[in-house]
Amino acid sequence: MSTGAFIDSNLALAIAKMVLQGFDRHFRIFQQITAGAQGRFESADWEAVRIASWQRILFYDERVDEAIESLNTAFALGHLDELLWQEVKLQYVRLLQNHTQPELAETFYNSVFCRLFHRRYFNNDHIFVRSAISTEYIEGNRPAYHVYYPAKLGLRSTISQLIRHCEFVTPFEDLNRDVRRITRVLIDYVRKNQKRVYLNFQIQVINAIFYRNKAAYIVGKAINDVDIYPFALPMLNNEQDGLYIDALVFGEKNLSQLFDFSYVYFMVEHPVPSAIIGFLQELMPTRTKEDLYSAIGYQKQGKTDFYRDFLHHLKYSDDTLIMAPGIPGKVMAVFTLPSYPYVFKVIRDWFDPPKEMSRHMVEEKYQLVKQHDRVGRMADMLEYSYVALPRERFDDALFQVLLDTCTSSIELDGDQVVIKHVYIERRMIPLNMDISDADDDRLEALIKGYGEAIKELAAANIFPGDMLFKNFGVTPLGRVVFYDYDEVRYLTECNFRKIPPPRYPEDEMAAEPWYNVGPNDVFPEEFATFLLGVSRVRKAFMKYHADLLEPEFWWQKQQSIRDGIYEDVFPYPPSIRFPRRE
Image 1: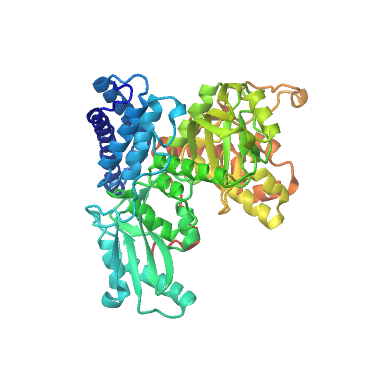
Image 2: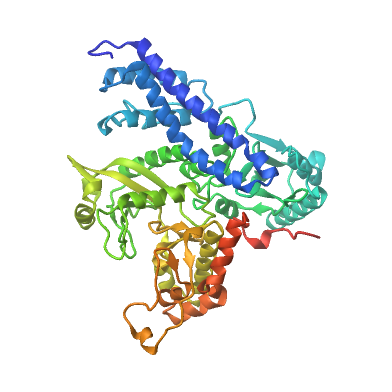
């Protein structure tokens, strides 16, 4: 290794090339898995969809490990030579000048460096705290989007053409019908909101299909003079003889729900991801780059952009970190910065009864959620190690809680509090708090959404474990989402039972149950005891979800999962779905 003031530029270049080769290998494999989404969709191989989604999440860390092994083998890396690695970064930047995924390659470099060396070197001299390469106007071998001009072809022909450009092998069951429906909805919407069609009327469509779960989406925007109308066309497979358009998802709010942080990542194959992100940000200005990179499967890039934004926010704010609103958790210490819409979750050193688990078990639960289909009902999380935050930004009460209950996760370094392991999630209104403040109409909507969340999770083979309202939150879009994962498990691991009748009248008065209870036993009848003590909550629950109190509901869900039945969960309002037959 180089020492002193002499810098071996050839060695630095060789190291930089090897790191970039590691990234290019990662991106190539990532794209291969993603490109297979069309075949899986057309063959309706939903189990393969689930496996591919799971594999793609794991591959990043595997590629980073491979790159580190190659570096250690080739260069026998040991202690950090700061001057050498500053030169490595400079050479790496030069290699990225004509790269079509420079932002992703920078993040990969950060991952490699941060695995190799101490956190004291996690600064812009050594890693890409700030991006060095602009992603604006990068051109790959495929355009980012197609433009269609309905004035030339006619609106119906234009819509037909943009659908045919998808080049599916499987035919549509009735494409003319679908085109008529889309045309009718689009014209009605424009007339209602604009009154007329202007000279500059065009449709722009992203040159890649968005695949997720059992659907494929065309995503684009209609432009009518200065007005922009974001839209998506969800396509489904009838699993018999063809494809069909299920709806026209129109407007920023509905599109934002489609890209919500509680859904599993899309599969979108395109050589210039930054171009896709730029287009999506025009459709959904309130969605951050972190949101959108994560939404299309680049969750590590999402982490990078989140961290950059958070550092910037810390610099330009002065409020303090405080305990998050709500009932404190037994497993996690949860805190937040009021001016920033996220919460930070640190595993406690011990768990008060009745919790019986280890730190490793909690981490496994969170990893399960990361890799599983979240069906829009489980919040995605960002996982970080060795995050340094200024001590002065911590409220004293919060700081004391962390010292008292999270000692193994906290390290003090001068004026910095170093959190060795933390999960970061989008901040939501705790459901129990929203319910307590709600009028009757809102309460009914919240309870309806709560039960729907549980049912959709069950269809995806997830049982929340602890179903108390405090473990669910309400997103800015009004959806009820589960966010406390320490007791989550696969539904098929549960043994749902009826409570056997008492043998004697005294049984019902006894402190202990008169029947045996196994570790995986669940008695749905008991849900009413801890959920429905308030009469108006009980009334709303029984109106929509009385079946959750019966084991038969859960048995049926388990059987469907064992039979390989993947239920439909639609990330858009049912009211906008087209009828299956005209």
